[in-house]
Length: 83
Ligand SMILES: [Zn+2]
Image (cartoon, rainbow, N blue to C red; front, side, top):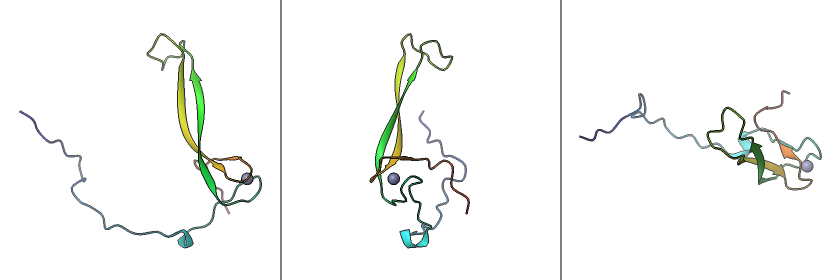
């Protein structure tokens, strides 16, 4: 018997709110002030000896990020700047 598992509260959809760029505070590159960014990727090697590595070999892991389209400086969106 197959049951659909519904997450609590998932059935209620919130009204979608459209946020435009003009509603936001522009985030600029810390290095050059440019405000456009391109998708980029960080690659990390997880050692075979690391407890989180379930495999026998080192793993190469990809982490998506954004980089300044002008100077290439990475922008860290996990730490919003305080004004
Ligand atoms: Zn930049």
